[in-house]
Amino acid sequence: MEQWLAGGSCLLSLLLVLSTIAAGWLVLWHTTLKDIGFFREIMGLNRPKPEVKAQRQASMKAEIEKIKRQHSRSRTASVRSASRPDQQQQQQQQQQHAVPQRS
Image (spheres, rainbow, N blue to C red):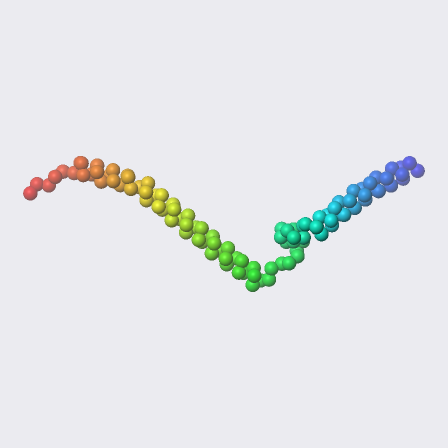
């Protein structure tokens, strides 16, 4: 008899914990979580239409290309500015070591 009571109380405790978690989730969902896009996507609600999805992807690709172009411009500009002193030094050295031509 005691074993049945112990098993029943364990099962009842587990059921109480799970129902409390479920009730908490429902309260959170109805108050805040339903407004957060991440949770709506997880739950499979309001999936974007194919046209909207394609438009988002196109705008995202355009933004990525814009950033890449900006990055490559700044990188080449820094490479150019860094290489200019070296080129000037090489030209000066060549001029110093150049043998004057006789006429």
